[in-house]
Amino acid sequence: MSGCRVMLLFVGLGNPGAKYARNRHNIGFMAVDEISRRHRFSPWRRRFQGETSEGTLDSEKVILLKPTTFMNESGRAVQEAASFFKLGVGDVTVFQDELELPPCKLRVKVGGGIAGHNGLRSISAHLGNDYRRVRLGIGHPGVKELVHGHVLSDFAKADMPWVEALCEAVADNAGLLTGKRDSTFANKVHLALQAKGFLDKGDAGAA
Image (cartoon, rainbow, N blue to C red):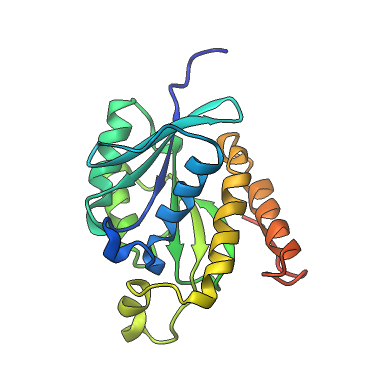
């Protein structure tokens, strides 16, 4: 091992507290919780204005971070953790809810716009824009006036099977992100969801 990389930072976005735990806006928290659970990462502990859990994915050390600053100030926690570990913006992957994708769809991209997402706006302001985003589709309510209530309301009971399947597929394939195999990661997640009947065969998983 070269030892040149300290680790990678995987950030799940959400709001802290039981009140928000099942909100659509918190699917980023749900995804990193599942990564920690499935790969037997360390217990969560409070630091960097958030909670962290550490482990290894595909021989790379990864720190998971859930900011507890509330969504609009997520960048403060991300910047503090990245500065402590001397990580560049390219070492950061953010798991976020995405209104512009249908429920259960996933896309991966580096950089780009923030599409009105306050968590991404805060991270870009503190760290720069060229971090990886794992965009987890939650669907759009149809009109702009309903967006706030949509993201801050709980997933319906009927939604939970696909939410759990999506988080499990993300966790199972998260090691691919450490090697920047973004398209392979997205395709494998989609294949897993197709196999469980949550996506049609024609749905693509391209980044």
